[in-house]
Amino acid sequence: MGQLVFISIAVAVVAVLIGERIINISKRYLAFREVTLNHLPNCVALKNLDHGTEDLTILGHGLAFISTGLKYPGVPSGDVPGKIYTVDLNDPLLRPVELRMPRNFDLESFNPHGISIYIDPSDDAVFLFVVNHPQHKSQVELFKYVEENRSLIHLKTIKHELLHSVNDIVAVGPESFYATNDHYFTNEILKSLEIYLLPPWTNVVYYSPKEVKVVSDGYTFANGINVSPDQKYIYVAAIFDHHVHVLERKEDNSLVPVKSVAVGSLCDNIEVEPETGDLWMGCHPNARKIFLFDPKDPPGSEVIRIQNIHSDHPVVTQVYADDGQVIMGSSVAAPYGGKLLIGSVFHKGLCCDLK
Image (cartoon, rainbow, N blue to C red; front, side, top):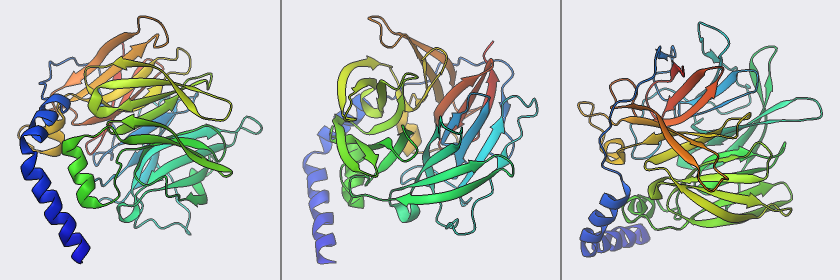
């Protein structure tokens, strides 16, 4: 108790001494930008998914996996328990199907965040990796998807001291992945202070049953992560520096920086289009409205696309933008079959026509 009191007092003193610096940094990074509307045609809200569709990923034949019910400090959330849904984007009705969870899994504390799919090339088995925050801790759940009865089999829970504040994950094998830590500190008070000071101290961790290591660091709130279709590059969204970073994978699974691409927004999760390699991101044009939520002045949404990211002249395009009247706090976006699926930190899921 004495240590906690000391930390609290120290944080308060530091906040007073550098209050002006905090305000200046926040103005620089939190993007107090208002949204110019850029809507898409025929947008439909996904039924029963109005309590957050934080992350999603789409299989090649159009089956989307969606994590819902995230409870994250500082962000609005409801009392709905965490769940995993699928949506068949080939179905005109776009009906979300809640996946059956195993009986031996703790559903009451299930708090899903980033997700990723790995398909085993030997037998086409589908493995679902889910970042989970029970009691606001960080661990990764590994499931196997059973299509016949629309259920998940829980294979293992992965915990490690280097996976201390996991935000997003990208699977690169049946038990291996890269993950972003969005905070440097583990103490809750110091983690809150990080949001204001925004030090570039967060990192990317590689995990396999044989090896766990930090493979890249120096990010201001490392967030979304994904891999190129050829598996040669990793993409990381450092949300508060308004850039997407490109890193090359080496044989030992280490990462080497290649370039950074400015996106002009606070981009959250990254989805990669398999056919083109284009990056699609749900972004926050005004982060202040996320953290200081006011239903009368809701946070807007923005979808950013990056084409030809490995060229000398990547093309960054705003595909969708809303002021929060249609969808608040977009966190992820992915295309399939002429449609765009958009998720939100704490609001509904949306499916729009791209044409």
